[in-house]
Amino acid sequence: MRNSKGEIQINSEMINKIILGDIEGVLPKIEDNSIDLILTDPPYFLDKMDNNWNYKTVSTIADYCHTVKSLPPGMKFDKEQGKRAYEWYFRTSKELYRVLKPGGFFFSFSSPRLYHRMASAVDDAGFLIRDCFVWLYTQNQPKAMSLDHFIDKLDCDEKNKNELKERLSGWKTPQIKSCFEPIIMAQKEYERTFLNNMFKHNVGLLNTNMKIGQDMFPSNVVTTQEINEFMDKCFLLPKPSKEERGEFNIHKTVKPLQICEYIIQLTTFSDNAIVLDPFVGSGTTAVAAKKLGRKFIGIDVNHEYVEVALKRLENIEKEKVQSYKSQKTGKQLTLLEAKSKYLAGKEESG
Image (tube, rainbow, N blue to C red; front, side, top):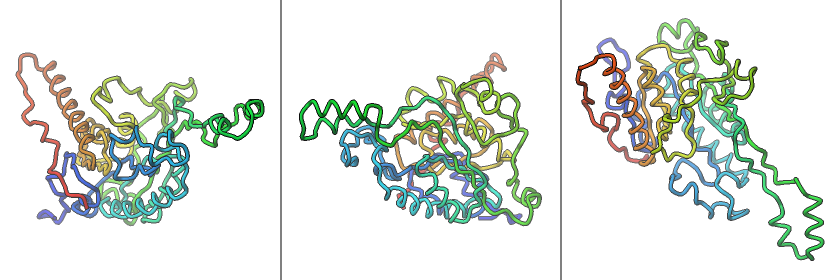
């Protein structure tokens, strides 16, 4: 839809809303060339954890883990995972390419083992791969497994079993402790020149006024965890607050708000910029956009996560009201709209 000036107008019912629905049903309703930034954390297709997974089963899945039944999701190695992830993300990325403005950026969290598949899908969909951001941390659960469980099942006496355990002491399955998360940085093809694209679409350049660490030039390495003096100076973002996630948040992989704020400030120029998260989960991207005065559209197929995202957005609204109250003593303010302020009508899955 275009206004009287011929400018593209996105469906106003989607702006600043969390939409319950499948991306295949929702994305086609978004106008071409209307989104300034896409920032998302998609499913990684680890042990059937694809775009149809349900949060209630994530911690209890065993049937999908065929090597060892007690393995949690994501531990089983299956080469087909990468192929399925590529095919699905290629289709998704083509649709995301359509809705993004020329010169607009696309940031996608990924996993170290499947990054190459997901980045290739984004690349093949038409995007320019500009960089790979790295979210660095030291605290994570080692995934390598001892072989003692298997040795105990061998058809031999206890002496041989104990000798074998001693020989293989410290030798485990090939899963290392993962201490970083790669983030694809891609860009839609810009029109003519960067300057021309900026004049026309208000997007396409990076804001190097957005410092990191101790007033350092923007970096493709970020951490929200204090590591040491040098690392903190160059790469540290503000620590997440205890209230940031919320005690009600049941999402398993909540991304730090500061990383999302950093990327939004780095890439969006206009206050009217629209940030799209097609897998919004518990709403961190939407919360970051709202705090920074940007518009947002969030999509998720999981009703429970949508409820969490709505609550987080309402908490931001309450914080703003309370802050304003403290500045305007004696003035009574109320939230004029209920939770539905941020909730679009439920979309049918495509």
